[in-house]
Length: 369
Image (cartoon, rainbow, N blue to C red):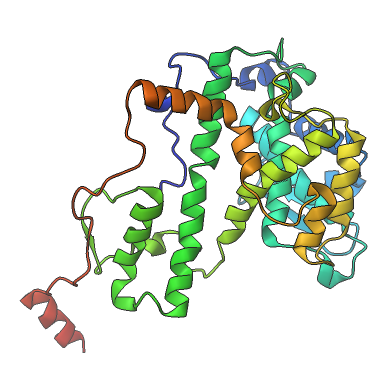
């Protein structure tokens, strides 16, 4: 509905018909259980010289849908703020997707455990996007063919060029495509709150940003009688969305820095590209990550990320490095087929003037008053 990702494998894959890497069936063949999946995630962080979860985590977390009652299953991690009680709520299915999600949620728990000795007010990430960025960065390692091979779920970590490019395209359609959407949600909110976008133009102002930044148009002409921005939960709930933009950019910075510390990525070395890195068992990467997490929000966020990244700013260059093979493939294909890159205006998509109300609707309003 929002076009925040484009799961269009059937029409957008560079090499149609090439099967993607998906170890779900192998996990089920090996009789994986939700508990085993959580144990693998706990082992991942322990391999980095980080902290194992306490025994209470295994007793108090929800790892599958209870038999006797229905619970909300949206994955979530919880810090009960006593320095000892950390839990996850996740109704697990034995799938590759849930294996990656569990590692992401366990990264939040790891963050809780690392900054637990900070004063209460500093028990948070240095900015809201960093907590999510750590989870996303861990997921990049976990979903790599090398890591799935380590787990005994793949026969070989080496893949064909077609599988590699298709996999990068799937990730780009999920993560790169998300960036313009994440940016425009809060850009629209800021325009509303600062008053530069008047109430009479709220809906068409939303679609102007959708078209200008995302290249997206509605399936039918909209007007100020509609309020499409409110279909996104964060807008009526007044929850900042920029944290997601920050996390999607910073995950690749973290991934690059940790992979370099692990010796798994060397810039300019084609035998060790960034998208194939797995930081599993690297104490150098884990020690750097732990140092950053232990600071919580006790220092300004540029200082906190500098402990791992060696720089104090967000930077999109690592994202481009990660997707470099796909970018080169796209440039070659676009040139070969003389594709136009971008989008052109081709018709009206929103009517700024409010439509005149019919006599019946006016009569209805008058009667109501």
